[in-house]
Length: 246
Image (tube, helix red, strand yellow):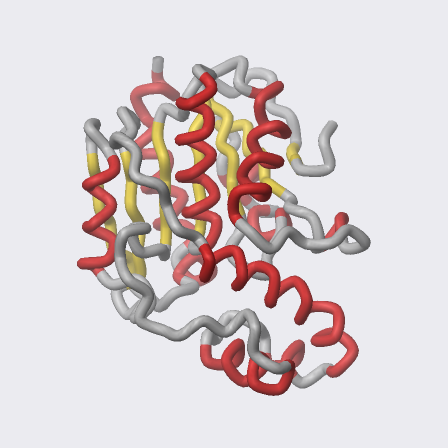
């Protein structure tokens, strides 16, 4: 099994769900999902530089990240599959679907893209990935996604900061190419109080599909993944329902 994929194989599952992490996160974000989604074969993506791949250098640009992820998942595209991407992971999932289309490979039955503005939306915040260490830490604190006990622990931050810098570099240098919309249904998910991905930012994703489009807003901020997990997973099952029942 590739170091990229963390999964509990489900031979009877009718749909495989590939899950892409947010900046600074890894496959453990989705560790509870296989038990909560027993009808899906959940495959969590583990990019280099984190968790079980801590000794590897993290990738700093989106193209090599997507290319490596696609190579890892290609052997697992032997049944219907969907992508779920959260924040930075949404861009990775979206570009992975485009790569598969370009290669003539199978494409997802649905894309679930969460907490991430459509790629054509101009970024409202200045880039932070090249800031000096002290300033970068201050900016990371403003995102409210890293626990306070980690931010205040010098040794942990020394381990985490290169990964966060790399992932923010991926996010902030992403410049999407002009391509035809995907013929893939999109489920776009957001937090009602998320200032980094507003309803308008999310609704703009509809430009990227010629198929069905659904926008769902959940209570919470940018990390509603943690606070609204049950509702989030229910919405995934709802949108995959016809395939699971077939």
